[in-house]
Length: 317
Image (cartoon, rainbow, N blue to C red; front, side):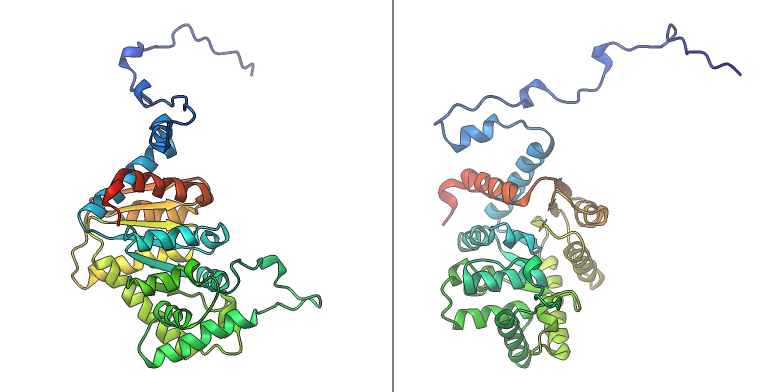
């Protein structure tokens, strides 16, 4: 059998006027003129793709703030490795962020920042003899706080936050957990037993961690019950936080809470398919909107919230 090249003489064409517009010239980027300020820089960005979604997410945050609705952040450990902790602390102080949920890895990083002003590389946690290294001071502080807080019926976030506030650590003002407790906003931690190093520390007790972690999940469900017309942003957590957020919303709805018009977003260049499905699609259903900003959090998070603050101007305390 001989295969012959296909003739295109009968190909059907359509005029440009019949084609759907993909991008309009008014949304194209423009050159930025040096020295004209941040607002003009934002105007120079294209209103398309990731930049266009960033502007829509900005508008949702600004609207939520102005109308007294919630703006929640859910963070993985990379958020703190990227140096974003102090920025989030200031957003809490300015009442832009109204609730925080962290993975266990994020909690560890936050505590190390409070202690040292820096985070410890995971690649350096192996000792020279090949054994896995569990950091003494980090594990002691976290587990002592949890073990005490369980008796007070506190969750992990509140327990560690109060312990940090009682300390005299040099870099406490850079701790998101301590700042959240200081300003009275809900802070929850969702550990993965067997994955988080502090859970393998000699001071760790499964009973305390389980009780405190479960209380934090119930608190997160309570936060989700108040999320109508608000914004939920998952940053740099592809596995734990997307599922925990979705389950918390499902739990709140299961007990009769009416949750509507949620704006949800994932900021993560390597977001998993399940993270995008759970947060961007399912979390915002049935009447909200979801966005995936597929760039590095160390660039997109400061840019997003700088644009929020620029829009709010004198409305910020």
